[in-house]
Image: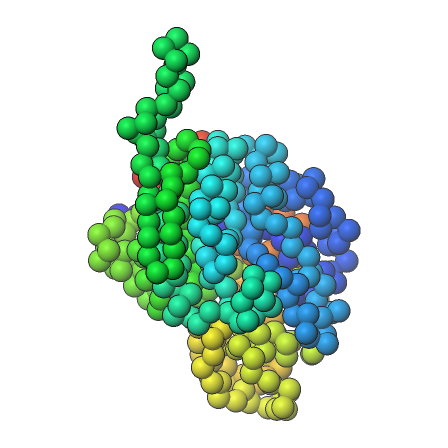
Length: 438
């Protein structure tokens, strides 16, 4: 199977960091969490290192408000709205892709199609949509639902939702607007395509009230790794973000996603698989380990148990001894892939509950890598050349230092090995990722 000879890189931007205790780290500028200049600084660090994309996760609620330990998780209570933030970052950056997570569970698809088409115009072709479904009951209650939709229903809705959004993006041919003043011709009506979509769940007439965007279709990402998630990503996405703990599991996921993409009539080399990593970089292994140990020491046991409660869809671990074995976990309506990952991790390493929450809190399913620039580059090279990943989603434990360490130490090592670009290859995100034009 043909594939790129260079890795692709994404970074998850966050005000404090991906680690649950990031806000407690003394180097994190807590007071700047709503400062656009701060977010621009983070995006520019990634852009200077030639990352493909900067992306934003999201949750449309003050998560965990019913949790008595919420005061210990302040970083999860503040989220700037992604489209507003990305639109603000567009004129403050030049080449890096700008990707936002938007759920298919609540708002109407016309709005999402219009927002991302607008962002693609504003950013000159650098927009991307990370398609997510929502399982948080707190978020559901903010949109008029008593509880989150069932897992299968969420993905069924997402598949239809994506079809509508992508159809709306093609509402106009590229040459539909001649803007001919001399002959008083603003548009060619025959180059307009109304969607006229009707189903039990949706009714969307169209067309979109904006010209086709620079990329034709903004780049689509998907973050589910369950069975339905892989199906959706293989059928519709340009990139998949996935959490994989072992090389063998990552290889299997990579093969499965590519094979499914081919079965859907797609070229598998046009689907990029990004494996999530939380890097701790040091000039020596001991320095990197010290960084990891310090932030782990900031995790309160109550917070660790709450993370397990959330990841398992409401299983109460507090009823069991902290230093006892992890009990058998029942099925839930939460993120299926994360639940399976926790079960596999606990059984495979015979972890106690305390050990499991420490691992879960560190990466929340993603792989933690602790080492020097050279050893981390060795690890990523093994995964990339072993067809376990086409690239990596870097989730810095804390900002800005976690991102700066990776961008200024690991990226140059990968470039020295000719595994990562030294310059951007195009202007649009599709060009940067080597994806076909639309």
